[in-house]
Amino acid sequence: MSQPYSADARQYATATERNRQPILTVLQQVLPSMGTVLEISSGTGEHITYFAPRMSHLQWIPSEPQAEARQSIQAWGEALPSANLWMPPLALDVSVLPWPVERPVATDALEQRLRSEPITAIVNINMIHICAWKMCAHLMAGAGRILPREGVLYLYGPFRRAGEPMAASNEAFDQMLRDRDPNWGIRDLAKVTALANQHGLRLEQVIEMPANNLSVVFRRQG
Ligand SMILES: C[S@@+](CC[C@H](N)C(=O)[O-])C[C@H]1O[C@@H](n2cnc3c(N)ncnc32)[C@H](O)[C@@H]1O
Image 1 (cartoon, helix red, strand yellow):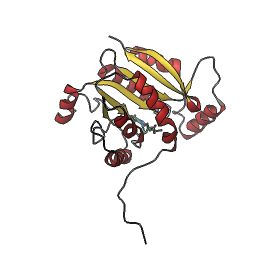
Image 2: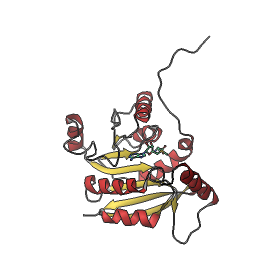
Image 3: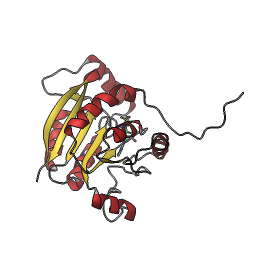
Image 4: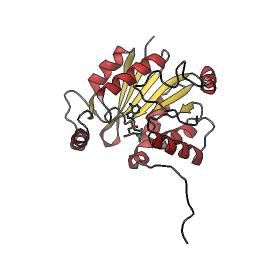
């Protein structure tokens, strides 16, 4: 018998099953104890729908510039509903100002939510090497605009580090990215940090993660 038609728009990113638990373990240590976490570049939505029910003291807002991916996030949100997970995902491209969490474009409902649960953290997983470098500048500028003093910007992904050769797997990944788009590529942590500093964000922690990735934690200064 043929399968019934399914309108399930859920997408699956193979790395997520491997990295979501190690990332969650770090987030449980570094995210603020209250407020709203804005995820930028939620992709399929698998990360945020895993994190939200496991960190239920926080509110979670997914965002993603690609419409098809937003459908996936919505579908994951419907399959794994969590009272603290905002839906629908926001159409947020870091280079388009203002961000949909900012005045004057935030909807009344969102503004109301953010008044009671202000954004205290931004989570951004596997984005800055898969877009132009200027997007990293937009990300840092936006984090500088919307995070309060002591707010956290969390990045996850592969990075270059001065004086340390990259793992062969990351060198191959970097080459693959550059072949696909010369503007893409694994970023230098010192350059990322310098950009963050320009927007009032201080590097607080760098945590080694499986498969030669890093968790990088920035904190907004007063
Ligand atoms: C490799 S995917 C990572 C998705 C997800 N965070 C994950 O780890 O599975 C890169 C993501 O960055 C998003 N992205 C690229 N450029 C962006 C931009 N200018 N603003 C926001 N997100 C962007 C893409 O749409 C895509 O979802």
